[in-house]
Length: 271
Image (tube, rainbow, N blue to C red; front, side, top):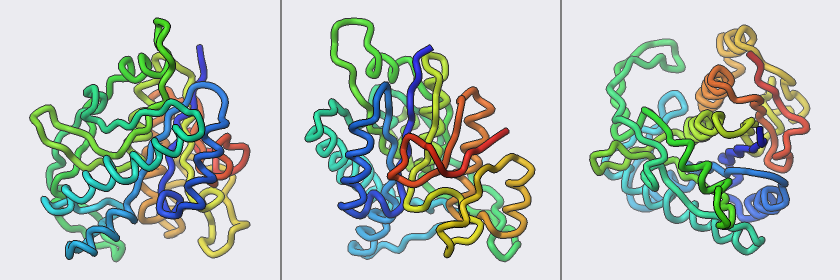
């Protein structure tokens, strides 16, 4: 079975032109089949503020009202996605920008209000607004782009964290979830490695110590890390998605620095 790398990039990398260019250089020279999934939450927060809209995050997830939905659609599907596609084209990589609505590759439903445990331990019923929880992904359509059966040139998908409900509505979906969804959908056609890249060298035991990378995390140690408060915020959905990906047949999941997208170091997630 052919191998493929699904690379998710987010955090400060997408916002900083120097970091983004370094990531693009790394990705462009990566051999074999590949997909890039990106975030862009900080850009969305910045532009929302410029438009007078307040951003609210709970448990690493963005509350998405009607105004915020317009912002993330513009930022994720437009500004960030097309900037990355253009940069890859400049490197000779035949990339195409996609959301979940394009080719109906990822369909979702609007999340129902749910009980969420806050940082202080209290629980509240939270309405996340226009946030999409994934129903299914069409890996065959993605694979047809990546590895065409005819003489057409292979295409590298660049996937933005937006999905749709099949009824004409765009929904905001966590970028880590998007990467895991893409990775899981491709397991029928490929042996998949999922790599989460950001500005740190992996999951850190001490956020202020760059040498405190935790080399591996399994389900038991993950529970303890959460209980101790070492893992919190946006790292929780990232790790949740990592474990779900392994359960669904993804071969390997690594969290590492964006300059190490071949994942020779970092934190390996283990069942």
